[in-house]
Image (cartoon, rainbow, N blue to C red; front, side):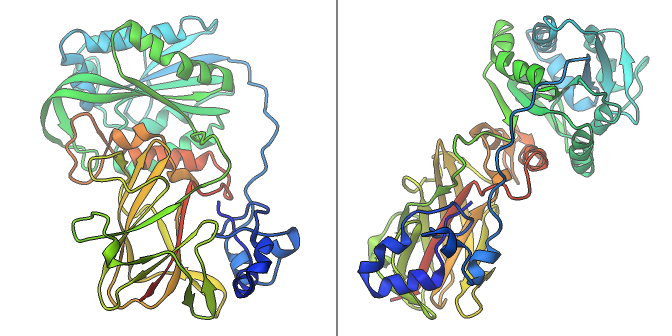
Length: 442
């Protein structure tokens, strides 16, 4: 979510500094400026209307539904065999941690094998210590990664726990998100550990084996159900896995709490040279510049830059300073939504000639490297990171993107978790971050 001021009013303010009070903070709205008053927020500029409606109001906290039963689904696909075959009884210790997390609940626990067209009930967690559980030999039939089946028969009050590597068939990711949403859980959470692994590795897009690995691979608990027991699993996860000496442990409730309803704004802008290093000689950062009929100065959350004409340039927009390749964790490319403001038509449009090269997160510092093509006319640009793409650091650290090495990472994790998070948010959820800047040739 962004703040904005009527473009006409801000342009008028630029004529005389005496009108500075007209651009002071006001109601939070999704734009790049701040509204001086409710009247100004409803002015006739299309920028106000097109930026989107206000964020959803917080609802009163609901009481947690009474827990009725626990259903544990163990992913029986071959991609988990490596955890069973790893040294030091990794899989058995995982099951012990799971028992610690559920032992205090005074309800019946059911255990099922997941991956086939229907769930396969099993007598206990220990039944999965047979290699045939994952390879598909008697008494277990071969399965793939049909994880949505675990939620298609979920009952009210049911705590559902999936133990999986979450590398489901890519075609089933949407079905998994839909199945969880249709079960209408009060809470959704995920716990992750880095667990030793020694076995075959599969491509989640084809389901075919692509080699073997002896190292670490993430293992997950995907937990849904009544609020109190879900939050207890996430709260106690580190202790339970710590007791069986499986660490580090990560956890997140979905959607991730940001600690603030306000988005993170870029506060710094730097010009970069061809090596990606800050280079103040490439142009002028700050200062008033014209974009069509608008005169823009670097106020509030809008930054300005003038670059040498006829040459492409890289900009680094950040909250606390540009992050290099070895700093923070990288988002998949293309996550920022880029838009250009058209002052004549008074609306936001898709931008051309501006691309995001790199986007990184380190604690609360977002840093984006943006390229401007040569010969671009002056423009006012905003780059929005949607709410469901603002994530916990560990989601990015454990996600394998493109040609990333797969040891210690999970293919498709970022897409799955952000899709789940989006399903838990209202359509007007505020953006996670906003980078707003104007550029012009010198």
